[in-house]
Amino acid sequence: MSGGLGKSVCIIGAGALGLVATKNFLEEGFDVTTFERNAYVGGLWHHTKDTTQTSAHPATRSNISKQGACYSDFPYADDVSIHPTAKEQQMYLESYAGHFALHSSIKLSTSVAAVERDDARRKWVITTKPTNIIDPSVEHHAFDRLIIATGTNGKRTMPVFAGQERFEGQILHSQQFKDASKFKDKRVVVVGLSHTAADTIQFLKAAGAQKVYVSHKRSPILVPTTVKGKALDHGVTRRLTFIGALISSVSPPLGAYMMEKYLLSLQNTTWPALKDHPAFATTRASPSVASSVPTMSATLALNLLDGSAESVQRIDRISGAQTVQLVDGSELPDIDAIICCTGDNFDISGLVPAEYDPTNAAFAPDEFSAFNASAYFREDYPVPRLYRNFLSLREPHSLAFLGYSLYRRPVFALYDLMTMALAQLWKGEFPMPSRLDMEANADKHYTYIVSELQNGHVNHNGLTGDIDFDVWLNKAAGTQLYERLGWGRDGWKLWWGDRKLYSMLMDGVDSPHAMRLFETPRGRKSWEGARAAIEEANAEVEELGKKWQEEQHAGKAKVAYD
Ligand SMILES: Cc1cc2nc3c(=O)[nH]c(=O)nc-3n(C[C@H](O)[C@H](O)[C@H](O)COP(=O)(O)OP(=O)(O)OC[C@H]3O[C@@H](n4cnc5c(N)ncnc54)[C@H](O)[C@@H]3O)c2cc1C
Ligand SMILES: NC(=O)c1ccc[n+]([C@@H]2O[C@H](COP(=O)([O-])OP(=O)(O)OC[C@H]3O[C@@H](n4cnc5c(N)ncnc54)[C@H](OP(=O)(O)O)[C@@H]3O)[C@@H](O)[C@H]2O)c1
Image 1 (cartoon, rainbow, N blue to C red):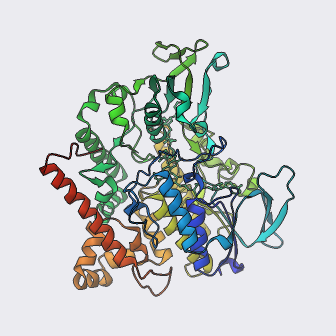
Image 2: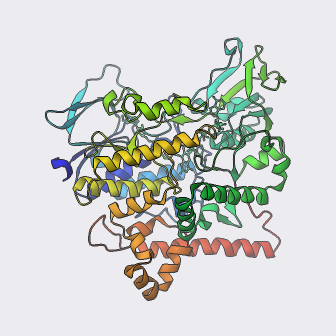
Image 3: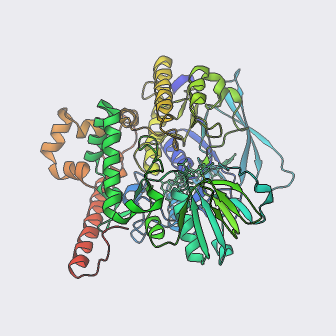
């Protein structure tokens, strides 16, 4: 075990990330206890009416396909939709917990109230209390290691509008938007134009809102979720990801330029009329593709184009009991509600002691002043200082924060890989980098974010396009994916000996099952069902393409994209 520490691990949170961490640490022989404040697992994919918790709406759909979004050793059931609904996501996560018998390690309805460090004993002391009990008794538990998986969407980013005290309608954050039917016949302003706004507009339209305005500063880069009958991510093969990442590693600006060209051409081919739409006017800035995720939506473009949502400028002030004034001076009258789809953030404030908080500016004073110098830096959106955006620099052998890191991969698969890697690292099976290397990695990310902040607000401050991140995770986890698909002896052996598999891995669906495919001398457990699951995923996707072609010939398939 690394750092001379014991095997006990505490995981806080049993959402998609906490669950996969629980599974991967149990599998590697750790003693795991996971605390979850809710009475259920699955986190935000379980719809709740609790307005203090972010959750999917019942009509939300995953923007990634079930073939791309699954965990490495647990495919979705056959009857699940290509883009699973919130209910299907919830059931998938529950059945994952059931299949791997995780419940005996998860303490439900138990909130972690505080985390303390006992330096003398080299332990994390966790204070818990039962959720929903008025006068709860607290308990203290000591662990060797601690994983924070409390979710990236917990803390609202809420704008304050000048004059809002005079508004007689409702101002709410999307976290509080639980029931669209309350907005039937209402006139609503949606603030922000990203994923949550796209969904909220659709839910308001379906509920019969009388008028929906969408007030936004920037234009999103908008891409469809389905292309010619297949999910968008079905076409993002491992080969394309490799090529894109290699170009970015040689020249980051060229990589960003090419990615932007590709995404914009996809947007323009899918919805040519958007080019002339006010929401995409050249006067509005666009986010940098290097530090943001394109908005994937099946409905937003159509709702903008058919007038179901009217794009307007940013709100300047509330100018009357029901009147909203925009920065261009125009006014929106008779407004009943303003729904702020302005994003949310990780919230560890008050949970972790300040000296272990990776967003504590005191530990990175020089770079932090560079953040502050940018007009776009927001204190409510701090940049964490972590090794590879997940490992504490101060206690790398015992403290990890899941949720900040983002790579161009579906998050369930990313966190599966990341927790496989972390388990190998903490088991002592893969060398812990030197402190200097870790500091250098954190510095590099800081420099990158500072440069991105010149272009505008950074929506995902843990996003990296650096292929080195994926290579390192795979190496640490011991998947041997890069070795078997690379230029070395093992790569040639697979290419020569099993061309079908090689082609499926490089040019087929980028299936997370590939991470469990190879029997390797060290590292995470392989899964004997991996090859069959990869073949099945590819066959399903091929079938989708064929079906679309057939419908096209029969004149039934109306659109190439949605
Ligand atoms: C509406 C919505 C739709 C999304 N859709 C997609 C999508 O289509 N594709 C995609 O890739 N990503 C999507 N995301 C991103 C999302 O972050 C991930 O899909 C993922 O589900 C997040 O999992 P998580 O475990 O980090 O967080 P959560 O699901 O939020 O889980 C965190 C858990 O920690 C628990 N917890 C928090 N604090 C404590 C405490 N003190 N004590 C005990 N327990 C605690 C919470 O109760 C919760 O169960 C979406 C996000 C939102 C908000
Ligand atoms: N169905 C789905 O798949 C789905 C649904 C919902 C959410 N999600 C996920 O959930 C996460 C959060 O998405 P999100 O859409 O809630 O947030 P987001 O992507 O962070 O977007 C926030 C939006 O609000 C705007 N904004 C921020 N602060 C503002 C302010 N003070 N005033 C006016 N506008 C402001 C931003 O504009 P600027 O860009 O101009 O700053 C942006 O348009 C993402 O990871 C997303 O993928 C997915």
